[in-house]
Image (cartoon, rainbow, N blue to C red):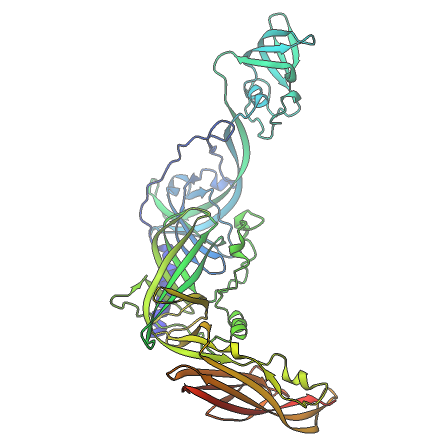
Length: 599
């Protein structure tokens, strides 16, 4: 039943692309830019490159929904209305996504229509820009009648009147077309590069523009220049729509440029602590495109897109859009991947070793008095949904995903690791002295949380509070539903400890390895001394990873082998204790055997 529900949720997510979006009013931009800046853009009705799509009509899709991953990739669904039946089934848009190879798809939200083809092309685009200097003004008004005030060699000024043409190698249009097709890269601020040929009643005079001190164009001058550029287009062909019928068309694409960064706030409650308020917020960074009143799906899990660094040919682009450091330096910081989790655990030894990555069950999160957005499971992923979000390009936002009360208990945690590999430390000479390590700072005051929310908790920074008082910040590892996790709060001051190692026995040349070397078998004893300065008992969890084979432990320590090669000469082992530490002192001990190279 659980698998059926999860697959139904996954199917529901895929059906988002097929769900009809609500009708929206198209906004028009009537703002004109000041002088010297492009004031308006007009697109000539140039058809796509394919003759079959020559009569395509334009439609303007908007981002209706997005599935956002923590690694900076986002699945976008752009949707809009078109009448392809009036144009042989074709419609095109200039909003071409820079999508991943194999992850750009066309679809329709109309039940009687279906998409049969996508066509990516470049088309000529004519833009009307305002002139920016004297040179451009003279170019676009060529053929007009003008009065020129010309400075002569003796510094006197002569007034000439007549029609003029421009003499310059940068002129790219025929004489008399009034600047039709003038280029945008004219030499701004360098009118001396132009020569003006002025035809008067008595003849034609050629005047360098550097000598012109005043220009008066008779009549109303042109103030705009025409610039031809190339624009990207993506055309969609659909079938089933009748002439004049409006059809909903969409483009789904895996792109790069929107990511979400999770962050927790944890407030312990009770004396002793029995519960905690856990809040999850999604910090959204949008560097892709404007998004208005859209559905956001924040994905928890380990997404796998094999060709995520390869652009689709339909993108008509050579590279993904440039993005900030939010999409690079912190990309792996909150990853749910197994490798990242393992590295984080070895650095801080805070990952629950019993965590599994099984698909989470269908969430049961409708707790009275609690706050949580709609959520769903989709096989190995989990999605939080937030509706009606609007983010312009380069804006950031924070969205509350849930605020729940969870079971919580206090825990003092200590993971004792060797400063160096023990076998390496024995390789040159036998151990003749006690190896002592001051690890008193290694004990942490932590909180153990039980995930009974029915949904997984993603890897993220967690800020710890007690009432309003901030206690510290650490990282919470990925926690599937139904499991536990430990969050470190602050180094302990009321529970301290020390640890020492001592060689108890050595068998010389006990083994000759396959590498040709001879090895001694060394028996090592470890002693852990703990001290509880609190007035009440403290729940203690002690973990001792080591290299070698565990021989014995005291006080119920559980030994196990870990790693991929359990038959290695010196296996990776771990001893775990968990117990109530009463006020006062307590000693634990263990022993293990390890092969070291003979000297």
